[in-house]
Image: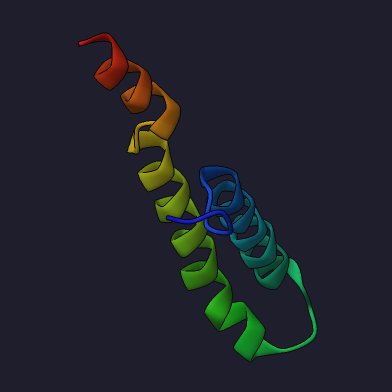
Length: 67
């Protein structure tokens, strides 16, 4: 994934999407932000769940070195 797209970066993105979606759902200013709040929140939750199921690169490298 390169140095920029690390697992920690995706976790930060997922957290930002979750917080942003929650803020969009709770804001009282515009209806359009409210409408897009749930898909943003859902995208963050799905990304977080996917990243929880991706194995660490360090663990797979250590297993290759052992066997």
